Length: 173
Image (cartoon, rainbow, N blue to C red):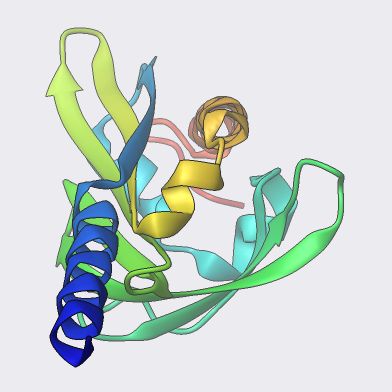
């Protein structure tokens, strides 16, 4: 009897491990902004101003550098703020910010801001992968819409900053 219990427990553990490893969902939001990557990167790296333009991540604490921990106040679908912690996995200035967090095996996220020069400006992509057993009960579609709103707000912030900068040959007041 004991051998059967052990075999059943092993099968259950293996099945749960497979669910944790196989459970994966992704969201993706893209937008082309008529500005150079450096201008967009400057806005993304200014964590103190997130509350002025970002409708999803309204506050950020921490430093944007590889290995650093960040603490965000994120506006949920219901309009309430919740705290989210992430670690900066990779920071490639002007190109990519990769952050990850969550509880391994339960629900994790791997978020990328990707900037790609294209004709007419820069393609901005927010891509996020979710893994863990929690994805079986999780609908990330709200995040895709929210990241689309965030990209549009980023565009508006970047374009507004371009309009307020002095042109070549002009002096700042």
